[in-house]
Image 1 (cartoon, rainbow, N blue to C red):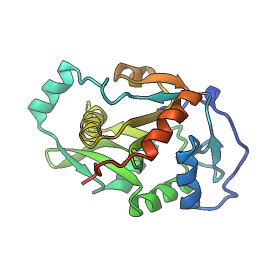
Image 2: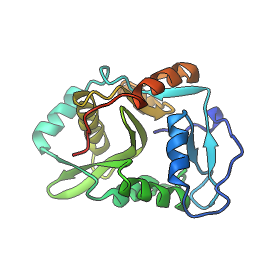
Image 3: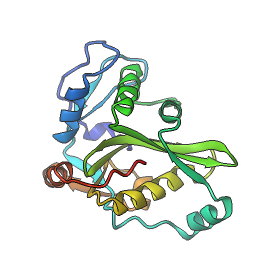
Image 4: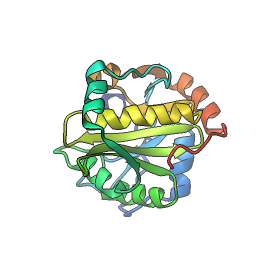
Length: 212
């Protein structure tokens, strides 16, 4: 989910200023350990990235903090999938610096309609207060980005998602890169070689669909 330019390997392939990427191409890229991003939200070009190191959250390693548990018990948030997918992506891209440009935004919308991109949404007092979105291919979930309007909303979404993925026998939660925030939630860094082995098993694994 977090992006670090210093770890990017630029394959030099661009979207040629088109407004969407080919869905078959992007799904094949994810299945081979490669993902797209833009330099800024103001540029149409998209680059394919294969970093030397990958961030993942082992699904059995995530532990909600006591404060988060208390927040959930007190606020009793409601979790929904894909009810406001485009709003979630807009929330994630509504930052001064972001890698989500119009090409990727449009592509994620198409992936959502095709059943490959999912949003996890947190509602408190009947209001959308944050969430996350990512790409889903068989037993692998590729986390793209998350945001919060109210405190802990993105953490609540992540907590619920990991519980659901574990219950449905997913084996890989990919964060692409790691950050201090993700590390505090159980993210670790592994080599691309190790990642590809986990990825191969995950995308060839039959699982129960988690986003219902």
